[in-house]
Length: 105
Image (spheres, rainbow, N blue to C red):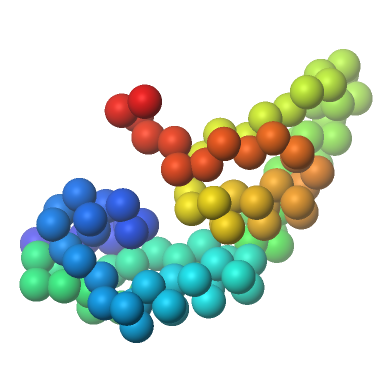
């Protein structure tokens, strides 16, 4: 069985990541990108990163429209890791960003 997702998915499946993999995830996030992990029950096979600029531009346009119609306090809820969430929020002008949200909360 293959898994594609974030670090939480891998940990939920009992798949531990090496220190080297953890460092790679941190590096990807610090570049303002979203890491997507690919692996099996035996471990991590690789990772790809999604560049946020296109996403951020579209989200910024949506938020401008919401503000134009009168919404003042916008909050971004995300399951992303904190560094990624803060990077996205900064790019689109959101100041409150609870991250690592799961359906279990």
